[in-house]
Length: 232
Image (cartoon, rainbow, N blue to C red):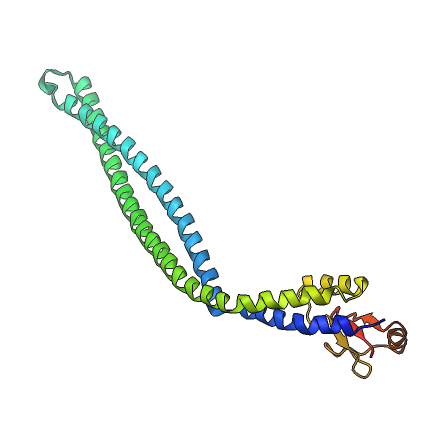
């Protein structure tokens, strides 16, 4: 089994791997991800607050209607000539008047509480919108910096991919498939050399039977790190 071509491929791929990691771990990109999440959460929260405000306003509208009805009832009672009423009717009217007054007091108290709630909701809504706008503005700034870095690195990555396409044609199909499968799982380097009697990457010691098999077949998957150990 000729491993030279796959090792040449891995050498070039290592450069690509490093550039990919450089972009993936770029502080500007990480900041963009964080700011984008903040903007999404702020948008969701602002929608929730807007819906909550609508519910409170509808409740306030219904309360105002009830208050108006109660006040009219109270005004009608006050318009009655109490001197012409019997004691029983007077007591009944006064009892109703007290209930109307109590109901008005409760409605006014509830309305005041709703007014406080709507003010709190609107206050949080304004803060959330401000947070959203700041996040979007900051996102654009960091994205511009990240895009600039991508523009610098992308040509190098494209050139390496062209080299890999050429080298791939020289690699045995079986080896290439094994390599690409590991690479897809973010395992790199894929092929590591046997170092004494241990894996050249994770340092796990191989058994005597495993080493004999490796020397016979030239490659063996490490049971610990899943890389492919090769014997030269």
